[in-house]
Amino acid sequence: MTDHNGDATTSERRERGVAMMNQVYGWEMPSDVPGDFFAVTADHLFADIWTRPGLSLRDRRLLLLGAIAAQGQTDVAKIQINAALGNEELTEQQIEEAAIFLCHYVGWPLGTGLNNALISVKADRRKAARAAEKQRSE
Image (tube, rainbow, N blue to C red):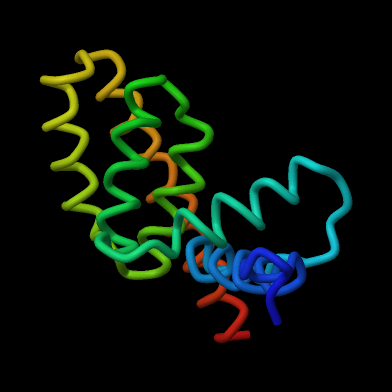
């Protein structure tokens, strides 16, 4: 279904956006979150931008990690690193190489922040894996 301008309806865009969010983050996102912020995020960023042709999800993730590192957003980096590892888009070694590379372009402290985010995510993932293994063995 399209509107009078030939554009996808809001519900179609929302569906496409939430599906892409689920793919990008590796978890199920509700589609009925109220508010303009979620609407712009789902209906534009994920429905229109993340679904454009020309770049793979891995490419987009690397670009996003570079932008996040340049801004020193280590909390956001942890979310993106965890999703990249969970979706098998990047390995731990590839993210570490990205951090080393970025140190030379965004500055050592900011690149180190990305590497520290990776270290934190690796520790959290290993702790969760040990807990899951312990539960299976009980």
